[in-house]
Length: 392
Image 1: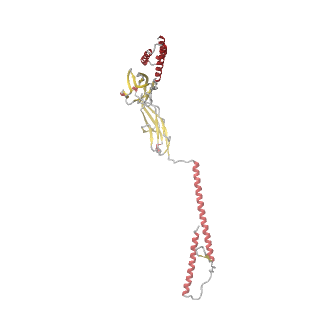
Image 2: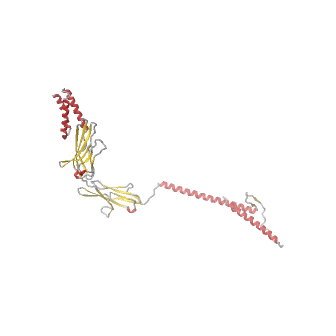
Image 3: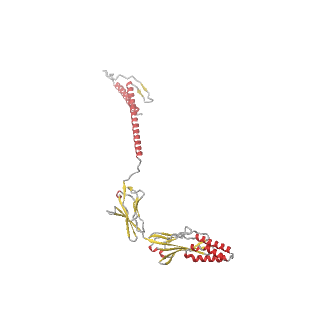
């Protein structure tokens, strides 16, 4: 039995250096239980040594898988949020039973959060509505604290208990030290909207003041320059302009303030906001020139067509007038139907129709009828002249 016992000490002695101090009692009890079970199997040294080696190896691998990981020290900003990491790799041989987060402050422990089969429980009233634990990722039992207070500083211990297949329990712990500090506000930075600092009249834009530090941070916007004549225009971080006017042109700056160790106020640099007059959609210069040239060309073509049309009408009118004048001189009579004309020899206009003999009454009527016929023929020829002159 002595060689077997020495082998047992050799293979498992480093195991005591692997585990943390709070877990030594549990580990010793588990090894003692394993030793008693193996000694009941057989008294042969080789069998005992092999069994103990296998038992120690299996226990060490289980402890390595269920090791908790996280940070030892972390710093949180007053009134902000913080996450205390506590993560392990799940194992099929172990089922999570409970998770307990405990706060050690002034040597007095207090349970902050507990998760078991019945659900999540917040046991300290000062953490109600401010602490939570994720459920999405197996093995992640980190604690998230919102709206940090200075009194939240202390040592937080994550304690996880698993149940093995043989109904035995395994517990691991990890401690994280949290320090809550108040950070003074930094110098704010002004950021323009999508249109930049030069914006057309009537557009919508904004100026955003951004600073870092412990919340809550209060902001104020002024029109003017620091140290000069200024006008308070807003008490919000974002200065909005729904419809810019020309009078909105000018310089603006913001102030940021918070309650850290003392009242701290910072001013940003002044920025220039320019509101320009309304401008339609601008076209490239070559497009403008091309459009002008095309317009001029179209106007010239239209004018040329109109002039040619008028000249054609005038030439046709003169030709028809000359033709009709010649017809009248020759004695041609046009009926207007199928442009048929009959030629009659023109009589001398200098013919003397006077006579010294008395004229009878019926002769006056005959002369009047002839004169009327001549007048009608002349009138018809004139009308035909105008009708033909209007034809293009």
